[in-house]
Image 1 (tube, rainbow, N blue to C red):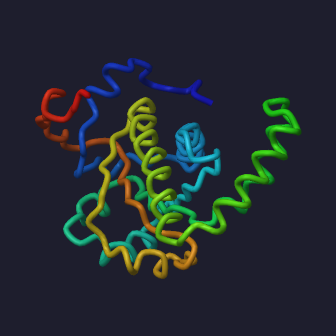
Image 2 (cartoon, rainbow, N blue to C red; image 1 turned 90 degrees about the vertical axis):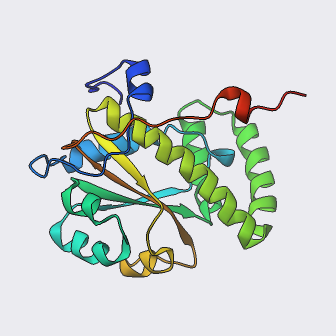
Length: 212
């Protein structure tokens, strides 16, 4: 993990990231490398380490044809990218806590008594939260994963574009995902830029920071 990076210059990775909409259609990212990037992005933090992000990789002509009517004005990314990554948040990610924590104990990363205490707290709390709050948690955590994935992609030599303009109410059903459990967060296009993205302006820290 993190051993096959093309670019390990943090300043360049962060400062040079652009939203790329037009990709080189001749560049196809292998599924093996896509799995590597997803695995590396999964080092992102999440509430109670429940890791609610789920990814549907659309990298076939058939899959992209199904996706095309749903991406509104973002068809160029769909047509030219190596893949479209549909990121969902799992509103029932607490169901994986036992497996995650047991593995942490097995690897010596967590004492058994800490696991038992934390699991009890989680299972008494998260399943009883209102659905709206579970959706919010899943979306926040999955967005952290998505941002990390965009930076990981740059480290591998690729470009991305985060997409929020799509038919949120149709995405899960179209790709046979349980919409009662999984909520769409965003779509990331990924590939090698054919046209560089535009450099954009950011508000200054004085404009976005409040000191008290």
